[in-house]
Length: 296
Image 1 (tube, helix red, strand yellow):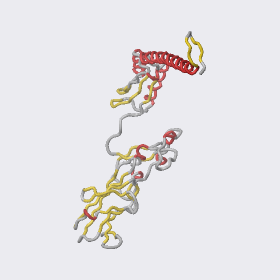
Image 2 (cartoon, rainbow, N blue to C red; image 1 turned 90 degrees about the horizontal axis):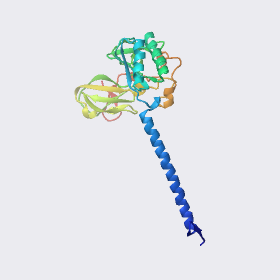
Image 3 (cartoon, one colour; image 1 turned 30 degrees about the horizontal axis):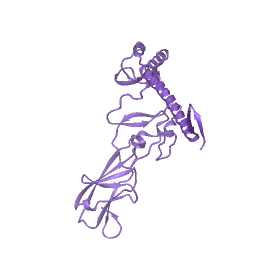
Image 4 (cartoon, rainbow, N blue to C red; image 1 turned 60 degrees about the horizontal axis):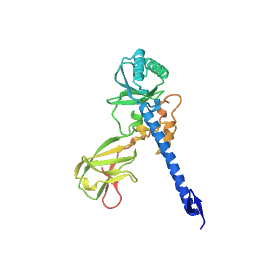
């Protein structure tokens, strides 16, 4: 084994190698510690006085009858408190007509003042929700609100003014059964939905989600009148989209929500929604021994 004198000490080459390795590691860790301390100091400085994109962003409620002077003075007041970005949030009580010429005039003033103050102004895309019973009618740009009408059997929900509805709609039929024999099943003939819930005399029995589109209800059928309800359930595809760019049914990828029409909303009848609903009355099928037949 070779050895050499180092700093007045005799050490082997292998030991020297280990010492050098340790020394390098110590130097690296020391440098990392200095870098960590520097980064920590920088982080503390950023927390104390963050840049615009990391600063507090409060909701800026717009209501009442706003004026350009109010908008500019509010932004100056916020900037004086080191608030560097805001979210415009229209709320109940707003008297300036939403999305009107005056509304966009206020926005122009807000953006102009924010640019001068080096602030961000964000759009909080929400105003008051429409409440009550109503339907939608396709228009040249999107839809218009029209009075609601009861949903009818034989047509999908889209064509009856509910293109964005993805919940459930109940359809009821009454069946008279004489002497109970054999087996009974609720059968769907013409429908479109993600799943259908079957209830007999107010009690949930089961679901229909695959061919042959039937649900056995033998156990719950009684001689005499039987009230049966089928609730056709849609999906959130209609409610949340994607609604544009002819998306593949069953696919909802991020890119599908980045293909908005240009310019502005397309005609209402070009929105991509699924025509859920019950096209034909469901039937109660009866089987004594062999195949099921429709009950009278």
